[in-house]
Structure formats: structure tokens, C-alpha cells
Length: 339
Image: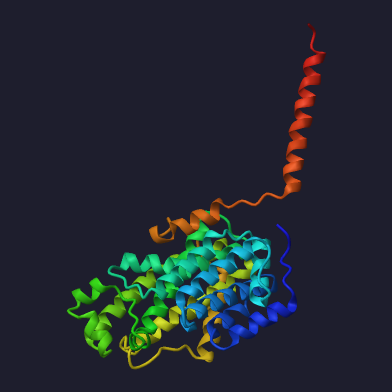
């Protein structure tokens, strides 16, 4: 694969785009090596542009079609004349990102555009795999991770972060007419989804649902820790920090009694610094690599990335020449044998 070759001004444009609302990303990205930080910035900028096209556009269906066309252009090696698209095309070329991954991300954003609700936690995981598990796997590929176990842990981390986001934004989403929490959890808690959306009010029953969601996220954060050991050493602190910072959002919510309706949990800059210091310990002693299977919802992402092998044309030529020489030497040896 060719080296990452995005133009510096395109990376600057991506960084500027992310400055407004990606504080947790920037806090962790500062701890990543430059060889990973720049392509990661391009990746997150493309994800932000895709998300904004759906959320902020007047016609989500048209926006979705536009995103698919832009993705086609990226994979044809002819990105649109936009710094984000050009930088993302450089990421795709340099790190062998299978098209299935950003395509799944766009599919998940399409579910957002359609206002899809989730009856079960398993259905919610299918959504989280698309909008966040994809990003975890793409980040792993940028760092050079190609084995299925490492990719599964990266997907775990992406999904855990998405579940944390959903828990944190329950009130904000409800006031916008959106609900991601599983409908069957509402029914078990004696709550009506329609009534909650009509009047988002915090209650002990809702707190129980949010606590349950964060428990699931914490399980995945614990699984994701096993993936740190398979990362290159210079990437471990940044990813460990991202894991700790996002998990801390859930801890902040728990400290507030799981009230995600009247408040929005945040992690202060001082707290992020402390968590980054603890992440350094995680990087030095990451524990044993995680070898558990991928979540069923994430399996198609892991399979797509693990099975994607990019062989340089020069390597193919060398291999053919090697077989040709071997065959020739065998023929010559056979000719020297006595009749």
C-alpha cells in the first residue's frame, strides 16, 4: 500500500472542521503518533461530514444518495473536490480500508434519517455497530491491526462509546423526537415510549434503563481493554485514554443518579488529564490480549476487515518469477537424471 499522502492543507481543513465539537477526540488524538493522528483526523472528519449531511440537511434521502456517490468517487480514486474527501481517499489508499466499513457507517446514518426505533437491545447493537463499530475497526486498520481478535476489540470499543453517547443524550434526543433506548426495556420498566417522547421527564424507572445501558457499555469497555495489548506501542496511550475518557462520561452520569434528561454529563479538562495519566499505565501494562469472539452485531465488520488483503503488484510479479525459477530448476534437474 502507498504511504499516507494527504495534502497538509487538507488535514488542516479536517482539523478545523472537528474543532467545534470533538473535544474527546482531540484529547485522545494528542496522544497518538503523527503517523496515526493525521489519518485519524481525516477519518473522523469524513464521519462528521456524513453525520452532518443527514442531521442538518433539509432532505435526508438526497443527502444519503449524495454520501453514497461521494464514497463511490473515493473508492474510484477520484474524490470530489473537497478537502475532507481528498484526505479520506488518502486514508483508504494508504491503509486498505474495505469499502464495506464506510458503507456500513452510511447505512447506519440512513437508519437515523428514517427515524428508526429499536425494539430490543440486539437491534440497538446492530445500529451501534454501523455508526461506531465501523469507526473502531477503521481506526484499528490505520494503526496496522489486521488480526480478527484485535479488530473485534476495536469494534467493542466503538460500540461502547456509542452506547455511552446514547445514554448521555437521552433527554436531548427525546426533545428532538428521537429515541434509541430499546422499547422492550421501556415496557419492562412500565414506561410508554410515546408518552416519554411527548413529555421527556426523568424518573427512577428511566434511571434504571440508563443504568442498564451503561452496564452493557462497561462490559464492552472491559473487553476492549484486551485490545490495547495488540496495538503498536506508540498507539496504546491514545486509545487507552479514549477508552477511559468515554467510560468516565458514564461514571459522571452514574454520580448524577443517571439523570440524562435535565443534565448532560461532561468530563472536565482536568479530569481528562488525570485519565490520560492513568491510560499511560494501561499502555505499559495492558494485560493479556483479548481473544474473545466479536459481538454478533460486529462480526460482519471484523470479517470484512480481516479478510481484506492488499497485495502489491510488485509482490505478485516476484512471486510468479519465484515459481518460474523453481519450475525451471526442477526441469533442469530432471534432465540431468540418467535415462
